[in-house]
Image (cartoon, rainbow, N blue to C red; front, side, top):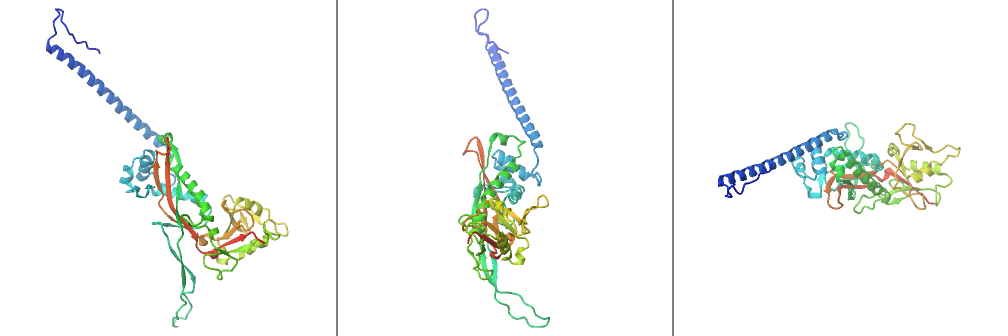
Length: 387
C-alpha cells in the first residue's frame, strides 16, 4: 500500500504536525511488517529444509553391521559432511593433535573387515592391535624350560632359553579419497560405506607391496626382504628364510613337481598345518600348466564356491606384488603366515577433512600406523629360480 504524505492543504498551507507524524508512523509500521514477514518466510524455509534433510537421511541405509550410534551420526553428519568439530569433541573426546580425528570404532571395524578381504597377506598373517606406534615381542630361539620327572623326584635345572626381540618396522600409511560437495550434501549418499571402502582399497594396495617386499624404512619389512639361506632350520641365523632352487636358471626345471614337493617338506609338520602357497597371477598361470610324470595336473580348482584353489593340497593365495618368474627371483612362497609373519598396527584410523586443497572437492586424508616383519623364519619357505 502506497502512502502519500500531503505537503500542502487546499489553501496552499503546510499540513499540521500531527498529520505528518501519523503518516510517518504508518510508513514505519508497514516497513516493520514487511521485515517481519521476510524473516518469517526465511524461518519457514529453513525449517522446511531441515525436515527435507531428515526425511532423506531416513532413507539412507545404516552402517553395515553396526548400530546408528550418536557417535557415528555425529562424526559422519557433523564432521565429515559439514566440517563441524563440536560434535566430535563432545561425543568422542577426540582432538586433532595427531593430524585428524580418530574415527568411531564401528567405521574402523568396517575398514578392517574390508582390508582383510582385499589384502592377501593380511588375510593369512598374524595381526595384532597396539595402542602405541611401537610393538615388541620376545621369541624363544633356543634352550628349553621344561622336562619330565617322576612324582617324587627332584627337579633338575633346565637349559637357559635364548630369546630374540621382534620389533616390526612401522610407517605411516595414508589414503586421500575425495568427494564432491554435492555428494556430501546428498543425505541419501552412504558416506560412511563409501569412505570405508575407498580407504580400505588404498590401504590394501600399499600394504600388499610393503608386506611382500617392503624395505623396513618408514614402512613394514616384507618377508622377501629378509635374509635368505639354503641351510635347514636350526642351522640358519635367526630371521633368515630358507629357499629351494628351481633347478633351472629361467624357470621351474624339468621336474617342477619334485621341486614343489621339496619346498613343502622343508617345513616342519607343525607349520604345514595351515600353510599356503603365495604367488602372483602370472606365476599361477604357469603353475596351472604343470603336470606330474603320469599327466595329472598339480593344480586343483576349489570344489566349493568361496574356497581357494589348491596346489599339492594346499591353498593358493594370489598376491600381485610377488615377483614374476625370472632369474634369481623368488616367485613362490610357501608358509604358515599366521606363525611366520607379524603385522602390528595402531588400531585407530585418523581422518583429516580438507575442503580447501582441491575445491570444489573435499578430501579425507586418512592415516594409520602399520608395521610388519618376519616372526618365525621356520614357518616361511621360498622357491628361487636358479640352476
